[in-house]
Length: 180
Image (cartoon, rainbow, N blue to C red; front, side, top):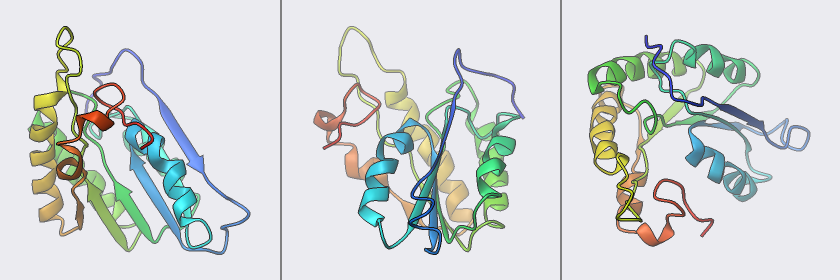
């Protein structure tokens, strides 16, 4: 496990529609600021059919506190589906260390929900030639490592990268997405 940290680490947890959705099947989104950005929109789209919660963090799966933070969410509700992503943080963590920790977390997640799906990391763009985005080339490398782990774990894959890779116009800042 790693103790390498970014300058600022954060965790955001949302339990949506607690009262209105308490009898519905629940979905949990796990990821980073991309999940934080679209979690409420997805909750609105699923309203009345599924309850939706989300866990977003800047911590990489190899962080020694990652699993403990995530367990807080997992042990509160029963989930039918977990859509999982992790990869846009911890740039200096090797792909081998990342893949090993990812395999471990996916194995643990399988004990919390009957369906786990991997959503790969969305593309990053350099929108300002004066400020190159170091994640532009790193995201495909991280996605390749994660894809190998997800395939070996026999879980479905949601390919958000391919869907968005040719759409820099939808990027707000080279990493995050506009509402559209």
